[in-house]
Image 1 (cartoon, rainbow, N blue to C red):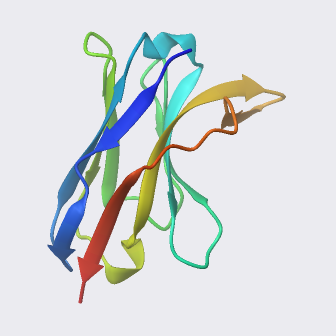
Image 2: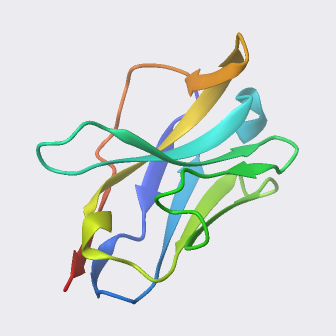
Length: 122
């Protein structure tokens, strides 16, 4: 089973940038796509970004134009470049392998690791 480890979180002022990394213990092609999710205190986990094995990205409107997902297949690593950060981006960020089924992508399993904390101060 491929293990994923997130890193790169931290404290940043509003308007600043961070780059998150997700290192996989095996091939990220074992999934149909890779995704980033986040969960803020007291809120449900939400989708942040997705990149298919073909390199096609997808974002929700809340981060579109500010966040960029990318992947280095040779390094089995996925990145999330976050620019123009806002206080509402504060959350724990998680990387997940995704499975494609019935026209949608889903987390490949129910295990959510520790993630990496992103805190944006106003």
